Picture 1 (cartoon, rainbow, N blue to C red):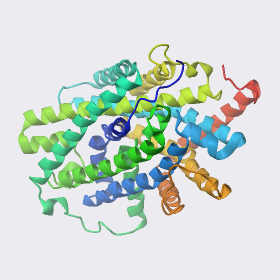
Picture 2 (picture 1 turned 135 degrees about the vertical axis):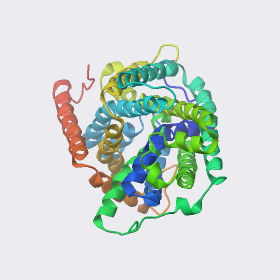
Picture 3 (picture 1 turned 60 degrees about the vertical axis):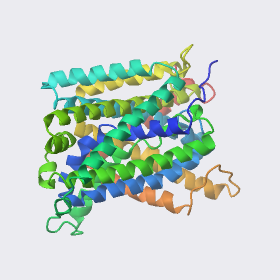
Picture 4 (picture 1 turned 45 degrees about the vertical axis):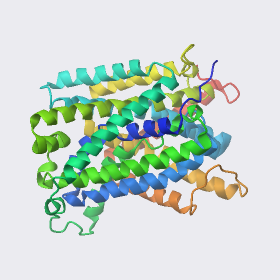
Length: 443
């Protein structure tokens, strides 16, 4: 059987989304967000991230329910923009994914190695060894069929959810409201620098929400996808948004924001302050496990993107191969894992996080939203298994917030994102010239 298997039910799909969203991200970005905003008003960045996720989720839900295939955005962009422009945009997405997906994995692996130093004193070289080894271990874990991975994801989410609920419960049983809401003078002074800070802080919060669409990349492996894909997306965002807001407010009610903004191990410090060093070590172990579960979901979802493109004749042919007995795209997994291994040895965490967000905004998020709006107006009798309420308002709001985040980023990341787009366009036309439209397998 040379095809993917529909083996993921709603609970498994939702679990994969949630463990993708809750990785090492929130535990390393909380200090960045507090410092950038300069006080408890950092909660605004988490609210903006949640708002953007919900608005964008309406787009993903419509697209994922209509075209539940492997590859997610690769398929959506082709369908939305037609043969001429859709083929190029979908190629651009795969080109970006081949760089961005390993960066996502590398960011989690780097964050894992940094957080591990709370338990073990590690040199910079030793941290690199840990991050690289973690990537290789994840490839080994993922080297099996989808039904086994679906069951494993549910177990992982139970541990992840329990850890965050423990943190929240601990925070609110030791909560100091005066400390949590000790806003500095001028905290809500709506000058240009306030919005610049909000944009830059939101880049970090949005990074922690990313993954709500992971189920779309696995569309060909979801049971009853027309219903389960939208459900899993909205359940994931609602649940994670509540957990993040409670976690951020709870931490501010235990650790003064002036101290929290400079903490390297914010959650470990939180548990150490409440229960002592031994409990903090145990909690750190749980956080490290959460980091592994997130990377597990990330690599699983993204490994389907080059596979979908190669199967369609729009990427290197070798990526279209499935494992002969386990029926998953093993070549794609191995290549993305190999690149993630290299990136984990080369880059720093803060740089990687910003690059991940900025790189994807134009080609993936905004292009999908614009394309879907155009499709609605182009096809008056459009049949969709799921329709967003108040169309096109959610999609337009999502576009505006994405543009705000993009132009709030540092110029070097904006230039880098544009360079990747330009290089992808050039590579696409080179590919088309040498392969031809009717013979488009890129060997």
